[in-house]
Amino acid sequence: MKLLVTFPLFVVWGLLNCNSSHQKDYVLQTPKNKNVPYIIIQSEKEIVDDPKRKAAMKIVLKDSTVFKSPIGIELRGATSQMFYDKKSYGFELRNAKDESSAASLLGLPKNSAWVLHGPYGDKTLLRNTVAYQLSNDIGRYAARTKFVELEINGEYLGFYVLMEKLKQDNDRIKIAKLSKNDTTAEKITGGYILKIDKTVGNDRNDSDYNEENSFVSQYDAKGKLSKRSKTHFLYEYPKVKNINPIQRKYIQNYISTFENALASENFKDPEKGYQNYIDVDSFIDFFILTELMQNHDGYRLSTYLQKDRGQKLQMGPIWDFDIAFGSDNGFCDGMNRHAWVFQYNQYCSGDAWLVPFWWKRLISDEAFKNKLITRWKALRAKQLSDNQLDKTIDGFNKEITEKGMVARNFERWDILNERITPNSTKGSHEKEINRMKSWLKEHAHWIDENIERL
Image (cartoon, rainbow, N blue to C red; front, side, top):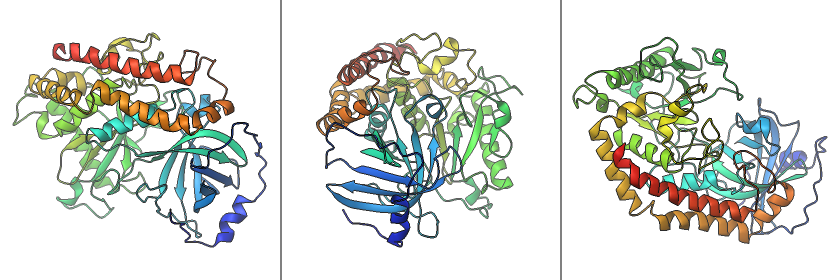
């Protein structure tokens, strides 16, 4: 792999070799594998949620440094950073002038924005990776990933997943660029990325949502016009600081018009109904991926929407499947059950974040439901067959097991015999992998038997 050097080396090495008050010098007993990408980060200050701290990063593979760069790094994750000892990070590649700088990492397409996801409670280590791969397999872009090991300020932190941050880009969410000056009738139609999610932290505080960062649905979770709606749409792209008032008004009106059509008596009418505003196929694929892997955050949190220029609203990409795959904390009563996630509200009516009325309404349209059934059966015959589901999980697990990444991670984080959300069971990594495989196939069979009775 080519060594990328576009800045004075003393800038990087000065950071990599500086002393850190947070260095813990964890001594790993299990031998490292030279074939595993090893990321070393040295930060000037303690890494916090915001702002990004200046740091230096290098990637070592087979005893060679294959990449170096200054970066800005911060903690990420609303819940995980509060409750888990092992943190996840977001980072931006920078140049010597401390400006954003795109580059390819470990063969992934060039970009400046990246995520280091640190699975902790997920004892399979693979939930997000498997989910994103299955999405890509059915033709819906999701973040591409690489397995790495991480060291920050001299402390070995174990197994991590390097993944693409979701953003507007020809190699990621491929929608038109929208500048502040794009306000003509043609250009103002896209592209936009919206997100249904928390703002920060784990508890809901509606004051965290404001006119600057978001707008609110006109409808409550039951599809009734309400000034107390709790579905907020966060501006993801253009960024809050870049989106102008005319663009804000356009995307707000578009979502409002779609919701009005969906809530109307004529919502099934091809000429007047919801079909005029959404890309139905993307909604169906999002539904299938969310339900197959039973992502309890689906539809209501970590949910992305996109609207390209001159195109209809699309769902996706999928994101954040940490508590998917039949986790014991998925529904509010703590029961692990085979059930539809889009019906989450009937199990968890008191939750601070509920599923928008969209999905129940869409399923009530026979045309939508029949198209969903047809797509499900086609995918189950190929990309989402039992054999393919096993093959996907086994392939990833073989890689991280044979390279010793599993052993080193659980030596560093000795949690296999502890009950930790979202894996409340005790046992080996292998046991969790087998549980993941068996649960996924059982749930797919449950959908096979129940999808026509929606």
